Length: 115
Image (tube, rainbow, N blue to C red; front, side, top):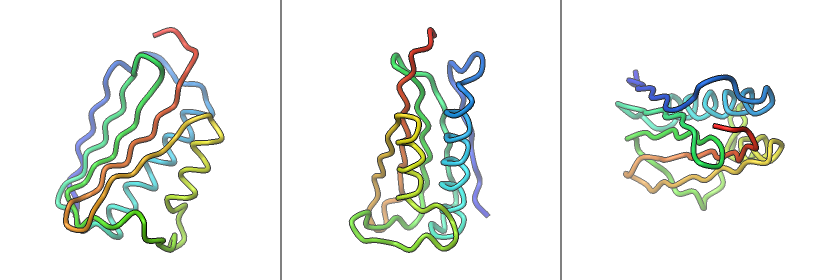
């Protein structure tokens, strides 16, 4: 299995319900992808407030992939589905990966909520 480390920083209070649900689903799909595809010994999930909103990062030290190559979703959301969900809450999703280099997925949502 994959050992997962969670870090939560500056997250006092709740996020808007739509944002909270989308970030949960993105984290869920990202970790499912780690389990199914990455063959990673470790994964790290970091959720933190930024000056402008909230950032979710899911990183693994698995086999990586070429983000330019389309991949089937295999019954999950896939990267396109995660990007669509993020767009629904005004957020964005970026993915950095390369074969043999692991993967870093970053989901950002700007919020108009005081910190």
